[in-house]
Image 1 (cartoon, rainbow, N blue to C red):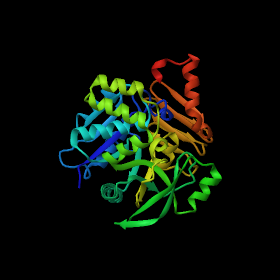
Image 2: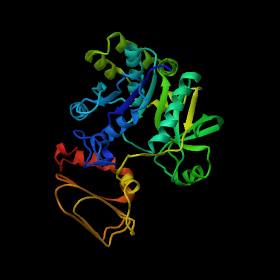
Image 3: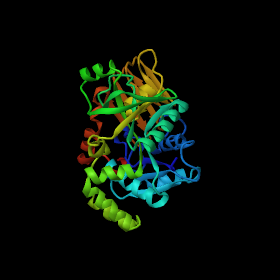
Image 4: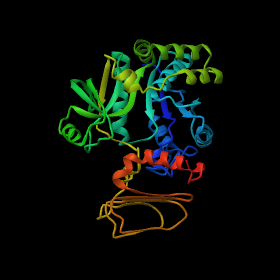
Length: 361
């Protein structure tokens, strides 16, 4: 098999985890699901799949790079691309594929966002190995399809075709359709049909195949990547690339347009740790449906709430119903739980109000 190179996408801020996550300390550098940070959890999942003497390639932002280096350099070997500005996933992954080919030749590329919860590791590795095998033999773009555990309206879905193969409990399907975030009634219907799966946002492909699809569907981006490669991916070449590239997601730009997309569906649990709502799925709720995470928390006569304390303060939550209360040493968030999907809108309003210090964001 060709060399396998993991690519870890760790460039976002994670505003929906404000006030804990912010530009100086984004969520991938936070220990949200265990004692390890999210990016370290992702690194751990690359063990056993990366080829010998191959280091994962991390893509992160200029705001985060110094903290990322300080964290990872203590324990991990890695290569790094620093984005001067975020342009979504299509430019980042196209650039990564060209960088890998320049460094390692044609390879199998495993693209992993740094904000996922995946368990158990053994079942996930079965799916990952099968995906790498299919990517090499079939010349397909492989996405990981996940059985929904709830009618989630915040995720994209995949409509799978009939099973084309199976190995170690992992099924291979062609993808019939990508579906954007549905309304609740549609999501409930999808949960009842085994051919509808969550789109996990994890991908496997040969670098050459992705670059072929970039040239086919996003020719301007392909030309920009070629220029960056000719410039040997220098800081100047990367600055020019990111200044000229249009914002585009890999789903919209490539996956929904390509005629060679397949999916692997394994028996592992997956969740996107996208907002404070995820705390209620990671940590156990009490009899009233309230989840408390952190030390020195007192909650009484609450129901359906999430209370998180990452501060040196004591937090008392009394009579909170369907609320989210988050405390850090310099900020407190109190928001109605149904409004969590709109948190980014409220953060934008906070920034423009001038009432809060800019360093909080």
